[in-house]
Length: 173
Image (cartoon, rainbow, N blue to C red; front, top):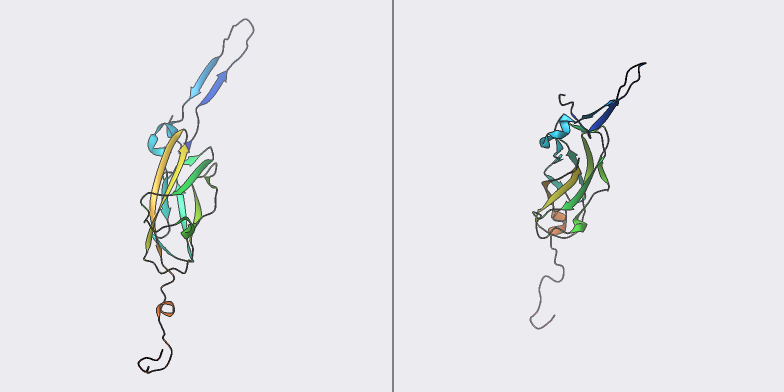
């Protein structure tokens, strides 16, 4: 059977019948899904709408099966900070709502990755987001990098103003 673009489990078809004067033992057929048989159809990818996000803002991230592929079973996605993240990235620097699941009949889902405002002067930091799932019994993983841009280094926050007398006499403090 040709691929139909739907990941499905094997299906069993039992044929039975009766007829006067005949014996019919029945037949059992197993229909193996051609779409699920292709390992490339059981992969996931992670695609953000943008490769960077400012602190205090969010970016939509899509977790998807290959183009044109949908699922007949819900697929739960586990998210984690990947090993390729900058050392300065902390769990409180970002957030997302759980659970993340690709629903039955769909080929993708999305969620918002929120970058927290932390009022700390810091360079742009790379968050590697790792997504893993079990897609029809196959463990799969995908990663993507999103840069979190510091929102604390505004001109108003980086201007140092010193007040006091314009002259100081030596020995007087």
